[in-house]
Every structure is written in C-alpha cells, then in structure tokens.
Length: 188
Image 1 (cartoon, rainbow, N blue to C red):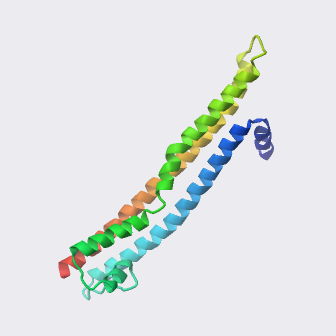
Image 2 (cartoon, one colour; image 1 turned 90 degrees about the horizontal axis):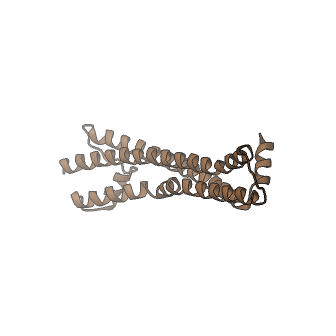
Image 3 (cartoon, helix red, strand yellow; image 1 turned 30 degrees about the vertical axis):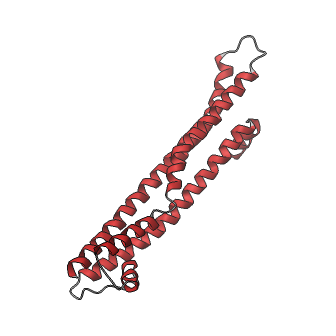
C-alpha cells in the first residue's frame, strides 16, 4: 500500500503533491480542532450540569467553581442584563476557533478540484504529440487526477461533520447556561 502511494506521488506533478499536502494539513487541523473543542465542551457541559443540579435543589447553592458561580462572585450586581452578557461571553468563548472547521469544509473540495483540473491539463499536454489517443490511455491518467478531488471531498465531509457535532455541543451548553440564568433570575 505504501509503495502505491509513493509511486503515485513520484509520478504526480508538483501541484498535485502540493494540493494533497495542503489537504493533509487541513485534515490534521480538522481532527485536532475537533478533539480539543470536544474535550473542552464536554468538560464545560459537565460543569454546567452539576451547577444546574445544585441550583435546582432546595438549598439553591451556586458553586463558586463553576463558570456562572465565578461570574456571580466577581459581580456585585446580578440582573438580567449582566447575566445575558455572561451568556454571550460563554458562548463566544465556547465557539472560538470553530470557524476553522467551516472554512476547511467549504474550501477543501475546491482545493481538491484545483488539483484534479491541473492533473487533467497536464495529462492532456502529455498527449500533444500523439495523433490518436485511446480511452485506455486517457482513463488511468484521469482516474489518478481525480484522487485530489476525492481527497478534498473526504476532508470537507470530516470538517463539516465535526463542525456540526461541535455546534450541537455548544447548543447544549447554551441550554444549561440559560436554565441556570432563568433559575437565578426567578429567585432574585
């Protein structure tokens, strides 16, 4: 398998190798962002669930170690406006860096398509001195050029899927934050 990949890269143009290298960087970046944000959001959601549970109990205790607890502890005046500012800042913080997933999802197919177009153009240029070209000569060259498009689509699917999963986690986090804000406002 490794031999096939090395052979493919040796026979490819510099543009195709560059496109595949860029798509590889995109894929690594997508996976790293996903893992980091997933762990961060899962931890935040767990903390907010615990905080909500302590607020819904009879003792109505705000844990100072949670995000809303530290916010309330630092502010003397608790009102609807300050809690809305807290909510917005929490969601902004939770969604930071997520735009890279959407950029990768939207640009990866075009980068792959660019590599395919250049590969097809180069393959047609190699047939310029041949008077008759058969389909059996063109088909392998075009299929090799289409690998860049397939790679671009694959990276885009991963980035889009990861982006949607993280957006859903942010929505869940926001739900817990809103619930806590509503409870705090109803008790003040």
